[in-house]
Image (cartoon, rainbow, N blue to C red):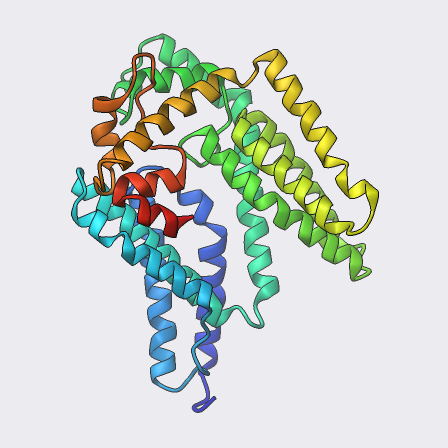
Length: 344
């Protein structure tokens, strides 16, 4: 490896790994350029800088990288022209630098995670646990207090950014949002991380461990499922169910019961269509995507272009929004269909 690395640097990396993994869901402000997001981004870039200086001083072995990482960097820089052509420059540039900071965090963790996997898992568990506890607590007093304040015409809500009607609708629906801005964001976070919790529990079981890791993983998974139900995020539930079905199919190759998710999915779809429980969400999303396809056909409008131009192309009855709620179509509006193909 070259020069011996001072022990204090190992302690610094231990702290940075914990912070980057654990506090990410706690500092989500929802809108680009907000203080908590900027602090986390600075931490990620600073951590990568420390690792790069160590490598330059021959205190670290050869740089770890992957082709997927290179492609991710290429995608972010492919969006750079869309940032230059943004309809709303400040938030769009903040969004672009946020993506860059996420890549910096991923690159940093690739360098320092060997030997710190258990530390990273502990940070992951701590971050998820605190976020889930916040979400579980909100229906007890936070959401009722917000409803009462909104009904009383509190000036607090008038000062918040966004569509006041949409905010009122979110409060009325009562979806838990935890440390995020919206319940749907919290639901997406849980849907993405629940498979990791299941993987932790399964790995612990396969290793013959029946101790704290298995118990904590099961408890955390159950609490996260309850929190997911409290979000009311139908898309997150659908994504998680689809992932579970695919995982089941892959887990039993050559067995007839690997096909069981198909009739279950058909039954679920029939219930949804018959009851109309998701019809409002489907109609709203269809309106978003119809506008996005129209704007993408006009060429790239830059980052934030959907928010700026959707009112011009939306149909009567469509709901105004700042985001497409579809990453591929968002990229298509920002930079055209070639960029959407790259994002896909």
